[in-house]
View 1 (cartoon, one colour):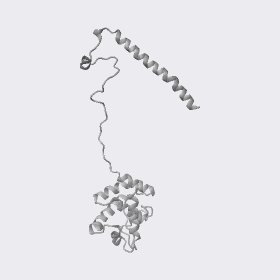
View 2 (cartoon, one colour; view 1 turned 135 degrees about the horizontal axis):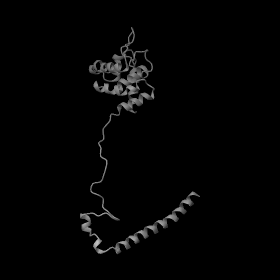
View 3 (cartoon, helix red, strand yellow; view 1 turned 60 degrees about the vertical axis):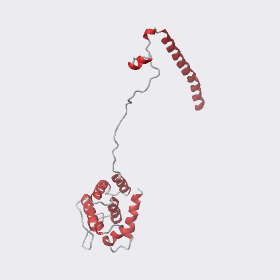
View 4 (cartoon, one colour; view 1 turned 90 degrees about the horizontal axis):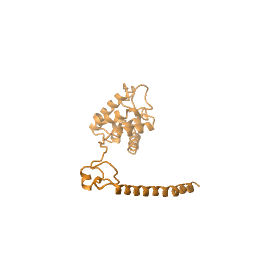
Length: 202
């Protein structure tokens, strides 16, 4: 039914529109024929000094208005990392940008410190109260090292990974595990590698 109504409207309006257009062109032609020759403008003078009036066809101006701008590259890593941590409801999620910047400062892969936090504390959800230690950093028989804030923890752990591990040849999770948690039978490195792989696919 709707199709019939639309078809009816089309066949009603199309002839009216066509007739109106033809009538307008005919009227315009008669109007031009009645003008005295002195008022007609030659093509050359029209180009030199355009006059206002009816112009059915006109060329486009040489300079078209437009919007110019500059694309500014943005580092997507903090947003990707934040989205990853939000997926796990991590209290570290608001610190994604800090993690990336600190990792850059110490020439680390920002995903490494995150993967270690995920292996050690389920991304900071299981840590000793008020320690802000998501990385199991400095845990020993006498207790756990605590930080004043997540910011401080990110800084100290990133610097420590660079100076005490990477700079000393412990580059892969398996190599880091030998010093970081020497009693692990391999599950620590397996977990860190899995989380690194998960973040790569993010």
